[in-house]
Image (cartoon, rainbow, N blue to C red):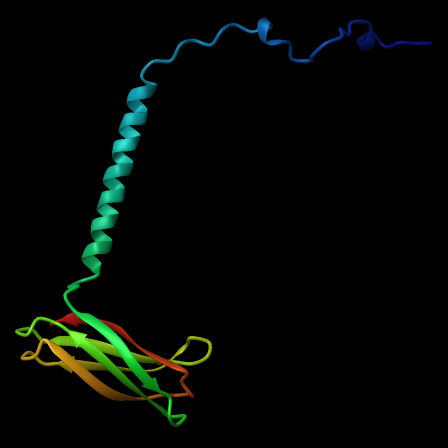
Amino acid sequence: MATSEAEKGRKDGPILGVPDDFPDRPERRGRFVVHIVIAILCAVCAGGWGYVMWASKGETEVINQVIAFDPGRGDSMQITFEVVKPSDRAALCRLRAMDVSHVEVGSREVTIPAGEGYVRLTERLETSAPATSGDVHYCYLV
């Protein structure tokens, strides 16, 4: 049986060798400091992002709550809601009506004047399609 020259010099064992065949890794210094710097950088970024999200929310002193909504006819919806705010400030609220697929089919902004801290309102929204739910999208002080 003929053997090739490659088979004659073949040794049994791993192709790349065993761990003892390689030199030890050099000791690395300063990895702990790098990890601390990365952790501080991540904490600063997370804190900055948290501040941006908090600041973009605006004034949170207005509390709103939907009491009832009535789809009624197919081209409008009636929403009854409450707003609690500081008496000396006006508020702007956006009402919206949505269909079965949660697509907005109507909206309206309502200005609540200064003077009362607790207001209960009933507003009618014109809709482009039959609505199945209504809510107060947002309220903020102006």
